[in-house]
Image 1 (cartoon, rainbow over the protein chains, first blue to last red):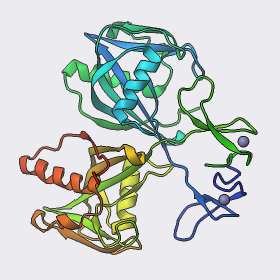
Image 2 (cartoon, each protein chain N blue to C red):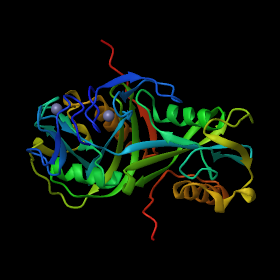
Image 3 (cartoon, rainbow over the protein chains, first blue to last red):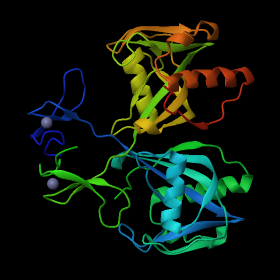
Length: 179
Length: 179
Ligand SMILES: [Zn+2]
Ligand SMILES: [Zn+2]
């Protein structure tokens, strides 16, 4: 951030009066510009005993498999956001969304909220964002080709919970991978 | 938003290629500036059978009572954020945070995540943000002087759940009050 979105003046990083951390402060109009974590919402779409995965058609991780998820938009609830992303990425309508996992991904300032969800019909399709969309049995999950660790963890937890038939809501963290 | 935070150029509201809704797009450098919901994290601090409330020392709703809560900051987990806010607003250290209620407040583009929490000691104090901080029995809650509807709903749900001894995680919505 270099300029003030309000007046176009230069911003400097400084600790505002009464605050305890540096913010981008406009040197012209004085406005303080905060930066806060973004929410990502998504789901595990389920049809009978299979779940729906999308093969990414865009970078990063183009060609890898993932669950439908994306940034929560202004003007929608978290459930509406997760349903919208599932429609946009997989062409699937989901219902009965149950909150399931929240991931803090502090090093990229993101909070993931993942739901379990039922597909309303077994319909889905490729989209601009997904070159392939398919239903997978547990034994068919492409574990070595999952796009993001948050999705790998979501899937692993899901099948673990499914084996005992209980899906408690949990908070977990994804930390930067060791080099 | 009037100016680009990257180059200082003018931004216009327009639908970027491949998008489906208007964004602030810089006419000089082309950068698309997204605006997304903010997360607020807070908790219900509990000491034995009492809970901790803060009387707001700042606008809006100065003089009204609330639970400690505030914007999630970059660089912290949702639990760290809720603990920090409780320390800053009530001078209380809390532990054992359990996710309890998520509120969509779409008309202000906020998502509230409220935890139940145990106070580590019965210590608390007034702060810059709170002119008074106190422990309340259920019968002492100042129901007509609660600052925000989201907090009123949180407290009502908490005492209802406490009466049956179960606190399932729930998602709820706060809609604009009828005029
Ligand atoms: Zn300015
Ligand atoms: Zn620009």
